[in-house]
Image (cartoon, rainbow, N blue to C red; front, side):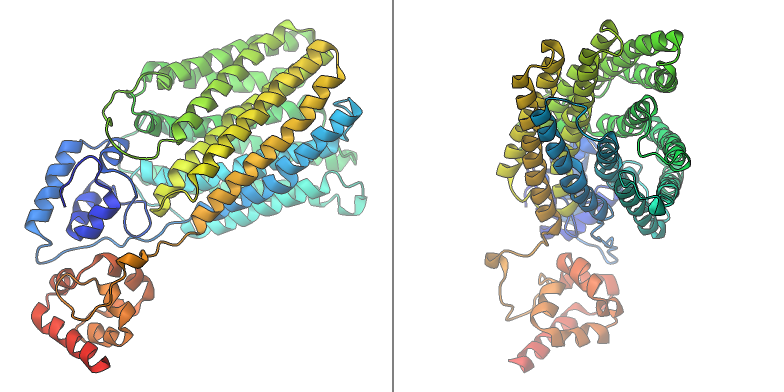
Amino acid sequence: MEINKNTVIKDLIEAHPETLAVFKKYNLVIAGGVRGPNEPIAFFAKAHEVDYDTLVRELNEAIEKGGGEYVELPLLEVDKVYEKFAKAAILFTLTVGVTFGAVILSYIAIKLNFNATHYAHIQAHGYAQLVGWVGLFIMGFALYIIPRVKNTELRHKNLVNVCFGFIIIGIVLRAVVQPVPYSSVRFLLPASAMFEIGAVLLFSFILFSTISSSQEKVGIFDKFFKAGLLWLLISSLVNLGMVFYLYNKSVQEIPKSVFSPYVHLYLFGFVFMFIFAVNIRTVYAFLDIKPVREKAINLSFWMLNASIPVYFITCVFAGKSVIALRFSQLVVFFIAFAVFSFIYGLRVFERSTKELHGVVMDRSYTKTIHAAYIWLIISMLILITMPFLHNKTEILKQFHGSFNHAVTVGFITMMMIGYASKMVPTFTGINMHSIKLSHITFILLNTGCFIRVFSQMSVGISGGKPIFYGIVGTSGWFELAAIGFFGYNLWKTMNTKEQPKPSEIKKITVVDKDTKVFDIVDQYPETLQIFLDYGFSQMANPVIRNTMGRVATIDMAAKMHNVDREKFIQSLNDRIADKK
């Protein structure tokens, strides 16, 4: 096989398993199921900051030399640590999340009043979207991505399932119990917050341990991950305080003056930090642009992290103190400047460097990343407009709702969908189930978000004209359809098990040095005993047969175990002949 920029790593590994040693050296074979990622080698080299020409030279040298006498093949196991988090997030948003939200918006449109819905229901829906959709999704992908960008193993894997169980219990209890008026079940509210804190502590411990174990140099994105974990811990403590307020006061609603700042604390602190960190590490390769401007990124980091606590505290007391109100209005300009500085430093809207010019691959995710940042810019423009509106007025309330939606759906959800559509196929070594559905998702989500953001502001500006309420009521259904299509598309992709194409399955009649170990045992199970007789004890493990057996040839297997290849082949052929 001639190696060029469009050579797919998965195909190269299959044709020349000896190249695995080179990929292992550069820590490249860390995704893509058991046969490597389904991506062109030029793209993969840039994404992992490896010189393309050097990598190709070493791969060609490995092919020319062959496997050598003692070939050590890394065990490639399918890592699906993110999968249960992603699937649970999809289930939450398609039930108490975006579905319930669409129903609420339609009810508001019918009543021509944003206050028509019980606020406890809105808070339960908001919490399910915040933690059940966004939080779960980011947590799952963080557990997969961070070990890979830090070139290390995920530490304390045995705690991941406990973490997942705790957060699921916490979300379900909170979303169900808060709107319920029955006092007999109110004790479950503090329990929900305790489960969430337990999950957050485990999650933070796992990731801090993983990052600390890395021998890689500290990257500019490292501090974003660490800050995100710190804000996640603080957010969970604030949530504990809110829940105890509900329990002690025997009420169903958290005061808006606290709940709204908590939402922003969670979003700006945890969610933004993790998204920004991943963007710093990957966007320059994904969009084929120059590396980030580090000074602008660092300025953004420190300014945003300094602004977050000020914004939270001043918003909590803004209704009681004019000084706090003025500070809350002032600090939004610092937040917006920090965000604009980050966008400038990321170079997300700059022209391509053309380094990957001519590399053939699906790039549908690029429009999603660009759209997400356009929505982030729109949200910041709305944010810095709000201080000029009169306090406690209907128009300010509607602008605030539009701002929240532009951030959560336009930026965060758009980014989540874009990255999942790019990275899950990479993780699994297969293509996205349907590119067409990805395009439909993009159109529907942007349509719904546009309708909601601008029609809700129009409600405030027009003084509540019915036509704008009617338009607002339709937005949720566009977004529900978008998330539904995305959820189905991603679920199908995650559930797809790589199987050889029918044209690739050839009946083995004679074993030679290039025959794959898996194919022999798969077609002639009785040959397994031959492998065991020759000392291949690991072949008794079906996982080994299904992973390493797919890439290892008889020639490589013989060299690995230092056995007489010709005698070994003859024994296999004799057993096959007996079967016939």
